[in-house]
Image 1 (spheres, helix red, strand yellow):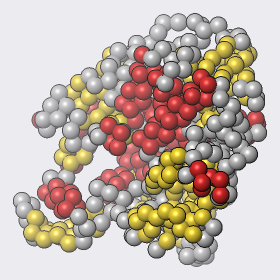
Image 2: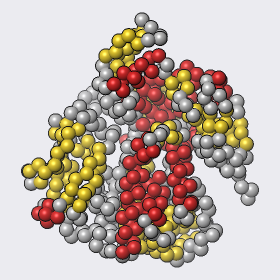
Image 3: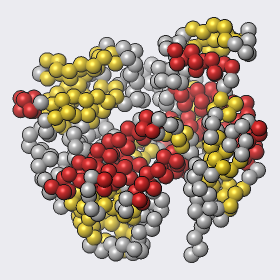
Length: 124
Length: 427
């Protein structure tokens, strides 16, 4: 049995929810004020995920970087391995917001997409 | 987007001139155009539009407005595209120097000095970060000290890393988000130091930006000295007591090369003050009526130069209404929206930090926004007229970091009979 205290982030109250888990199932929770809190604590205890946002180098663009995000939340323990993957990449301008930059990053089933439009640098 | 060349700006006449091309300015301009204003311009001193949003690459924007979470840059692009589609003149790299009572605007850019005459002006200059000098942190003056937003611009826009070993002072949301951002970029974030006994940012950010990465949050602590000759070498931190006094003997030196300051935001109102617009000392922004009109007829204010918002969704919504009211003013040439002689003053009472609008000049439904002074589990919001309660609303959980909005109908009788209404928060 693993014991954890999870701070709920669903609303500004920030309940401290106490959970016991065996890694597959939640056994006991306390400290929550609503049902949303139970669901949150469950996900957080068994499969914590986060949206990853960062940036990627751009060549020949009006900005040196394009901001990107994981289109869906990725497992928390994959954040740094994904970042490492992203760091290896440089893309050419133009980039359009929503454009897929990495498909199925590290086999997570999640794409990394651009969140900004970067035009080609104009030649003055 | 560069209107500079196309638009011969000397002695330009427009219906609506918006000062500032961030989310508030864009939202107000789009709404003005939708409501029938013919010529709408947005003036910005930067070479891009969207204000601070393009550097906010984290997500969580637009949830209330659209139901889905997006990044700041995505949110900004939606508004920029809409503005371009609506044929709004976006004038960038142009700085407003002066306004006057007749709504003449003096601007300067690469092509020189210009005069713009507007039927109505919308102020949307945004806000600025507090610096080391606002809080007077003693010590040396080395390089390596940044406000959190400046560091954010360096890292997210210009690809310039600010340092390796980092201390963050202030646990406001920008500070928390930057602590995570630096960690993701490979920096060593030593701690976040907060003067207050509780974090100033949202619990969500404390969890996802600090707890997730084991970044220590030192509550009831402050920085008492900055060390370093060329580059920052370290800071001295100390504990503070309940009266916010430094506890001597608790000083500790932390070695670091970079200090990020997240000390809060101040509405930017140099232009407003210079033209004589009355400022509310509590918000740092103009005093407005329910039409977002300032103390000068025909000059309106919205966004973070009015008061610092909690989330952009609320800001855009108010700015949209500002655009509508400014257009009604410009189209009717109605000098009477803001009857400054007769109005009800809205006064923040006990438990309330501030209320917007500060004046009600016409009867009808009014939307109020306010911030409370302290967090409370259960409370009742009341409007009091001469010691008599005329409105109450039960609230479940309130905190200073989340704004509260509510509607209240000001009847014409009330407008006639009352001079002041007090808004209070009770246990």
